Length: 257
Length: 343
Image (cartoon, rainbow over all chains, first blue to last red; front, side, top):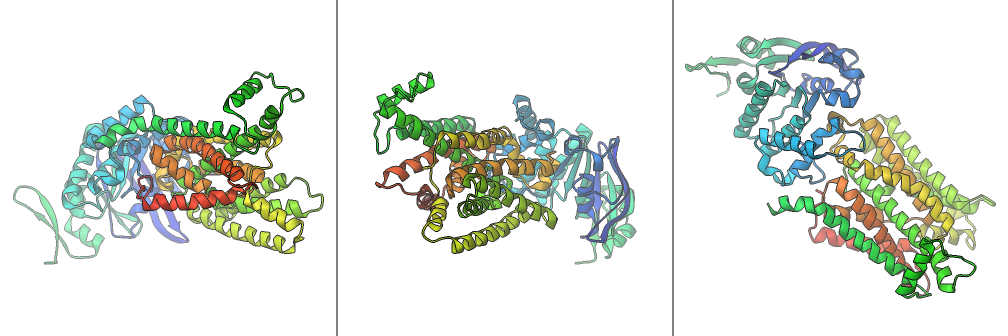
């Protein structure tokens, strides 16, 4: 079972942004989209989520064609974690998390006891159960990201899309949040597709990497194999080295000093 | 942590508070007016009406005043309050903007123009029907412009609403300019100020039809409004078909407000202020604030009308009072820092 993207093309106002991308997102692993600004990472995430419709090609999630399916059917299979939630109304953390139950509820239904239990279990899983009664806008940036992840878990979908989920977070929280995402992928078998700027975080946390260049897949595969100095240099158009540390860890460094 | 414990109780506290307020205002409204009726008498007559023992031919003067004048007027004001506060809550949530009122898509300016046309046309038919149809047409035009622009739909809707309101406002000004200054112009101006003096059982009947079904729809879908208020991308990701649900709810709110405004004239501020009061009482969750807004809106509108007909010997148009009281009250809310219900 997987999300499969085949020969997808899409553009804004005539300019083609995604030019025939094909890849798969397997269950139980983190797949990371890497690429420069404007390479099409966010657009691809929105295409997979069914927010945008491709000109051509197909996007299937466990065999279901995303472009022709109802919003509810897609949202029961794919959950989306935005970069940050621009709130206008100060919903409580639990109120916001329980909204993840929406694809499982009818037009006039509201969350019942089981839905609230699911929301609490999700908050427990990402370690924010103690925030249940707080206002979303009162908690810190790292906690907010965890709230959005908990909401996505409450959707109980086999796949999770994340658009640069750590770009607003400090160094510590970037690692804490991604460690939680990795645990979710391993323990629950959730397939995660994650757009990311920092190649070092991808090297640490991603199982698979898809390198995007000008709307096309430049390289893809297991992260250890794909993230070579040559590929990274071609992707980022700058001099990059991958350094092997004596204890087996690897880091990506640049020429800047 | 006190906040965490307060949440579950808050819903019922807010509903009970606004319910008590509205019931108190209703009871007060029966007795008030040029023909005072004692509370005991009010209860006796209401019991007669409720048990179908009321006979207009044999009833006393007090009973006739209550049945033909006060009761329809109370119902008309309460229904108008429900419509304005419900639509205001919907639009503020849907447009993610606490400054939005039910007029945002042009329904009031549309209804005002329609009323003016109805007043000016010789034998032009019912002013109310003209106002209702024109109000609905204005919102349809707003929606059509926003759709044709293919832009970001929420922002485009609000902008298109401004365009349509301005255009209908200009047309209304033109009609006022050409209207006969002794007969028609005062009628138009007076209509625009709003009031419940036209209350009758017939008006209540038609308003019930245009308000009640849609108010029920807004109450049933009020939890979904939370999801819509997250913005299009998140709402779509959470499985809401925004392109179907949003026009459906806009249509419902438009019919409610057009019905209310065509029966009463322009009444501003209620649809803007009451949703804020409801959120302060019940919290941000629209599932809790929507019923509180409707209940409180009914009482608030009725209280304004009580003041309108009792402050002076002649009746003050209620639209003046809602602005004169609503605007400073809103200012007070802003200053006193009760901003917890929005950011």
